[in-house]
Length: 246
Image (cartoon, rainbow, N blue to C red; front, side, top):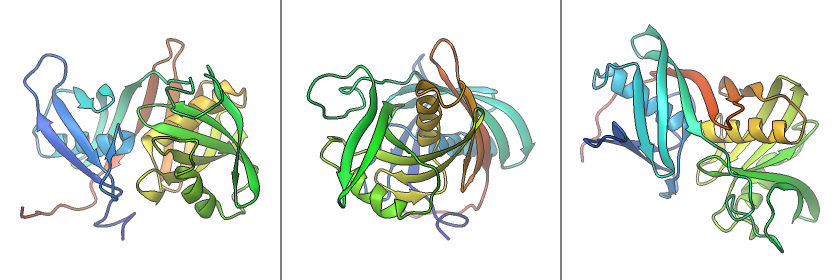
């Protein structure tokens, strides 16, 4: 089973670094062979692997990604292979050339931008949190969001493609998501999509800066601090171990 067993939304390749800026480099490869700028959940799983294999024991770890250094802190070791982490993943970028999103002129904030798919118009908000994330706020998920997500991912308005996230606001502290991930398709959870949705919910005034995000994979806490840093807190649980001869 891709989501609950010996399967995944990608591969994390780790390299030990000797420099002063980071402890490891994590390369994330999507199922379609493309590279991710960053994967919040994928990198958290990679960090948990390092602890499980006792390749790292310090409670703090600096992980270099294609989108910069991310700082992880081990909050709790629940059991071998079961960990609770806090990750400081950086500051969101909102301008249209940073998301990136094609517009007639440079936008300092990408909100309520109309995009058409299958003769339907959807209003998107955009942000870059290591990867481009486009959010559509909805009242329910009772529509073919997978088909819409698949087509919006490759919409010409997104020159680097985009993660597409459908966001249902429950209240000021809780949101629920359905995720169509760039290069991976439907996914049960995504750290960057979760973070992007939380930030855009706050920017548009729908929630506060701290929210609990419910996905099909569980609940994650996101805090968008006053200094603009995003803190992503969640679990990583060992599913299986194996060897891959190469």
